[in-house]
Length: 406
Image (tube, rainbow, N blue to C red; front, top):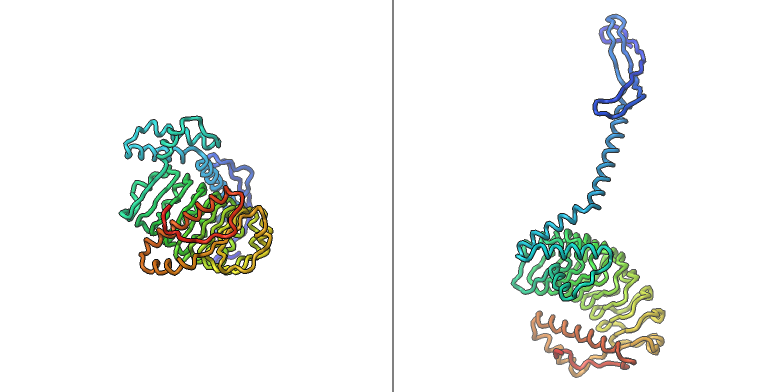
């Protein structure tokens, strides 16, 4: 090799051995190629090192360091630090509520310990209910337009009950309430549910009846422990995301008084479903694979535009109660009608009272109409409950009036 000044460079390979570093990291028997570029004319040795092995060693150390960090993070998540933080927040909340801090905190710790072992201590139920109420948040009344600021730090809560307020938004910090079991928020002004609701992995019940939801976030499908979901009367709600198919533990689903033209595909994949209310929608037919709901026991289909029921419904062996509107039904599986194990209820509107009822609906406010729909739903539930105790169901039922409060 010739240098720019005309001198000649002669490469000479020489191994370089690295010993233990100053940090104590053991580096043994690692040889790095050292090339001595010797100039013939000047007699100067210019060392040129191949550092690829050092770079590889450094990358290995970085990778191992990241692995240790990840393991440490997992250890912290599984440790008691999160519970200690939660208990500290509870202590602060107790002081703000001016209750006996030590007793309340001790009760919480005891209940948490027993809950982890899936057992409950033998104590007076009156005291137990009283103590458990401290883990329940309740808010009622139109005067409320936003949630209290202190709610954000009360992540120890197990239940939210927010009814009849003017609040229009579910806060994103709800994801911090990982112990939440019940989210009961009907009759508010909610227009959407935040994606963060998918973080509530321990949620058992969700009630968003009589709100203004038109879209359900796909993240709700991550609440895999959900057992009861109610979404009655949400205005323009007409479809559900396919991700809700993951709700394999769901047993109770209420989609009444919406705008569904068919039963959503995700519903047919809720394998544990036992109770389904699709009444007062826009159904004109039922899917031919509805018998996928093999565990279904109770089904409400009245106040739709159904003219027939698919024959495959005869394969739903666990079906015990079926409620339909009999005014337009012309084709029914004989097994459903004749089976002694199924209480098949056909509801007929009273033709005399129907016109009067329609005229009355034009003259009442939306709030009053909502109350009447709510009362009618309560009446139907009460009526069906009474039928469960009867040996045989009536051949048909004529609705005379549902406007009186029982």
